[in-house]
Length: 111
Image (cartoon, rainbow, N blue to C red; front, side, top):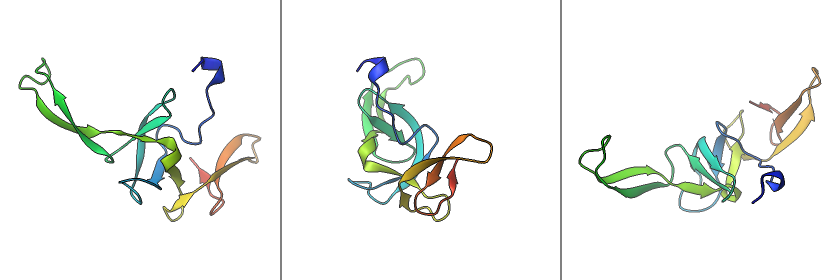
């Protein structure tokens, strides 16, 4: 995907999200990383996979390592800052003239 044609995403790194579909449905976590090419996000503590690692300087024995896999962003929604349930987001201009993200569920500002 060309850099100038990248899709605007509804989530960003550091956001608290809820999984709405798949094996991890109903669980929540913080976004660690987003891959804009594949539209997939790594969520802290969710979708744990086993990776077979070769021996290296940092891991001299090698073996099987557990780590977070990715989840497609269409299966993620923001967690409402008030009650932690899934919510869509909107955008509005605050008193200072700055555009902020708000929760459609409670109207709270999403940091």
